Length: 336
Ligand code: NAD
Ligand code: MG
Ligand code: MG
Ligand code: MG
Ligand code: MG
Image (cartoon, rainbow, N blue to C red):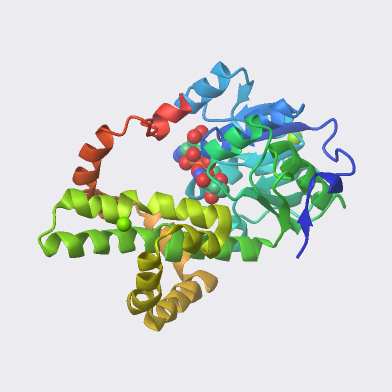
């Protein structure tokens, strides 16, 4: 395991380069602003006249279409949504020059072959392990979120050093930059979000809520126990691992965890996690998602609509109205 920190950044391997950030969304905004504050010449590629092009201009960036931004820059960050990247790549590929860098924040398209970069460029990844708003906020507080770094293709001989300088420019070397590969980042990222972080957690929360409500308890009580308090536990895990959680919860909670946890999340869950991992590794998941997107995403949208109609949502929405400390901005408001 190699974890790079600020001392490992021997020189600025991106000195003199123009950095184009394609897409000014969650990651794009954070990368562009952090890199500019780190002293780089940063330009934005976006759809002309679109809402994010306006937001980037309002933040003082020069904005071009994707092809023009690529032509003007030597280092190009592909930060449009994963499903949009193959189409944007078609627009920029003829404008990539010898020794340019094409950087990703997630390896999906390159790893599963939806984007096939030309051989004369560097292809790298710097993947912050957090949403973009935290990448920005940590940087502004003089810190940084941990990042993964990978080199898929090294035409210049400097790909690894350039990617480390980029991660440093994001603030990533404060917490550490871990070396990985496109395969490892892609497969572990998809597995984490499907099995544990999003898929597993959402399902666990909903089943817990439904179990209490079906047993006749108030939905508000179920909401507090199964969703609201989750943050307090996750904060303890984040700060100090399982040990810190056991230090702070009651003995009753710890005993109940040890005897009932394995009844809920048993070996059959792990066996199905392995099935999910296999679908990720062999490309079954990526193909299904790309096919769904290409067909217009109707199935995806229908599943999302159904999920949003779950009673935990209306229950929580009313309770959260009273929690004045919660961030109330949605994604579009964050961007403005
Ligand atoms: P996003 O959904 O915030 O969108 C990025 C931007 O792309 C938009 O703001 C817009 O400027 C542009 N865009 C959107 N649709 C477009 C279209 N149809 N045509 C052209 N441009 C369009 O994206 P994101 O979440 O920042 O993800 C960017 C990359 O970063 C992805 O590869 C993602 O996997 C990776 N990543 C995201 C996160 C995260 O927390 N969001 C974390 C790590 C890595
Ligand atoms: Mg160029
Ligand atoms: Mg992730
Ligand atoms: Mg992901
Ligand atoms: Mg309790």
